[in-house]
Length: 128
Image (tube, rainbow, N blue to C red; front, side, top):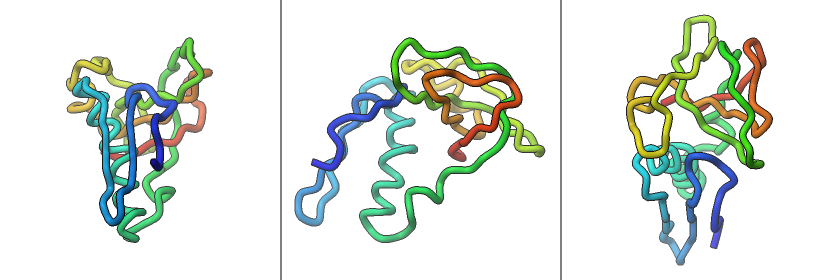
């Protein structure tokens, strides 16, 4: 067992396990949550598992363009956002675990701490 869960929303529950040379993945059932888990955890895990790249290489940095409210749980959130040429990222609407609208219209997934973000805060993101 490599990971039996992640403290991330959406994307919980996610499972990563190894059996010999096989990587076993369990993804959440909601469409957006499954895409986020596959994009943010499984793709880097496959890269690390096969020796192609490091997990840290997928994170980029920029500035948050709008406030993101705190979460009532101690979890990181991955929120779809558009990315401007100046690396300012603005969250998009439709970012619920059962909807793919936000994921389809976003350029990046913002890494939002449980405490939230204020406009102008530095932020890390994953490119879509």
